[in-house]
Image (tube, rainbow, N blue to C red; front, side):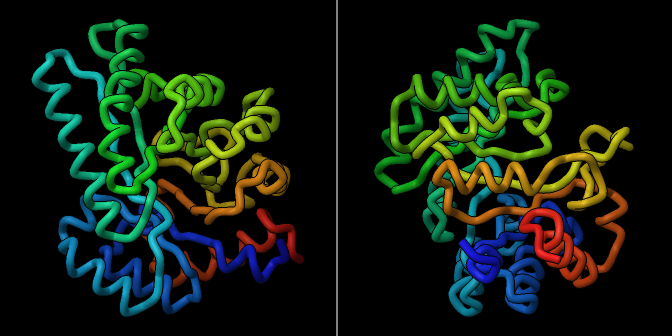
Length: 277
């Protein structure tokens, strides 16, 4: 795939410019020639689902993914059932927006019970598979860095996410690879190559050393220590040919004008992910 083709597959994950509404993000992508946007459910809810879909149709910008579903573990049966229902709503929203991917941030540990919490995740995803298949939507398990196991995801390793997707054995279930969470894994390239058709999405950013904030300290590409070119090359060599989302949680970036962030993102993506000088 050449640089022009790669640039057509670039996606702005809405979290990168937190101050932008869904409308701002879609129009910003259209203005800067970015063909895809990764939307967040809260921003879509603020804008209105139907209005957001109309704007997508008008601009020609496509949705690479909808974030987020998941958060399956809960102390009671009724709470777990409520979370399943919320995930069904996320699937409906994705279908309405024209994307076939809901990103799952699976949820943190409950009652200090890691095995039980992981089983709740597996059971929750399994319960969604038939409905996701009906709606033509895929469920992407995003393994998070282990530091987030307590509050965001007990699926805290690339190998664990890949094994869970394989165990569920459905074409609706795969893995979302975000370099921030997996770059350090000694097996990262091997795991990426082994995903095959379960490789559902690829997110880029950078790891600042040391990170100024675990959650809100991701770096712009080129500002950190991740071998982005190498990981991107492995993603493509593995057979993943879909959009690449830039997803950066960083207060300093959020304080900058959105159009300046977009221009910098395009420049850094070319230089540090695609290796174009």
